[in-house]
Length: 275
Image 1 (tube, rainbow, N blue to C red):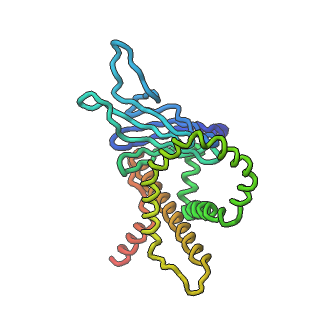
Image 2: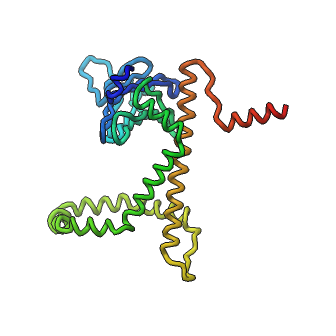
Image 3: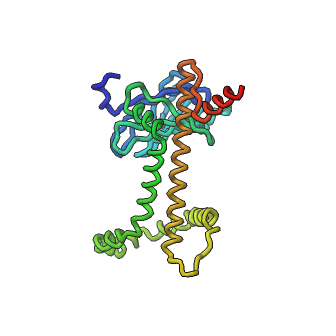
């Protein structure tokens, strides 16, 4: 890819995933991800529902897309009994500013990232994240911090005052029309809310209620800090896992051995010194 074409937001990704060869072409624009082509084992498949006319053979593979910010492709293959069964899924995401993104093939709990084409913005983004995983993990933690602090800074009251006329109109006129639907949603998502409450109590329920003159903001700050740290370490772990997968995929494509991690190199150095 030439330097002048680096501004093009369309990028191809390729690699091996679950004993198949994948190639995905995506267009990364701000706030939208569009998949333009998908091929599996060098066979290109249309995206979306495919209908067959009389006399036409039914497809062996179907790929259906959904999502806006993140494009989710569901791969369905024909089984021995003739039914179409869900198999792996392809997740395509874009950076907030557009122009770059990433593609992952997922099956069960395993995730395999695909390699972006050489010279693309996505490749440059992967190199930056691999070189500075702590920096990008810190951004994730700070993003979580901002989301948690906004309600505490009084901005919620300000926005409530600005949109109060609109909210009153919606409450009096619009919401009654959707009341049956909202009641149904509440019934459906009630178990989800109970699970989240149980999870929060599991993570932070061990923190005792402090009633010895310590202000409430101390425990609130502590819990927010715990959530920020969880976001930081989760993002850092995910970046390191993704980089290792990418190195393995790149080594497989070039026939070379994947480079050792920094910890493995230090362990080998110590073993050589001891010997």
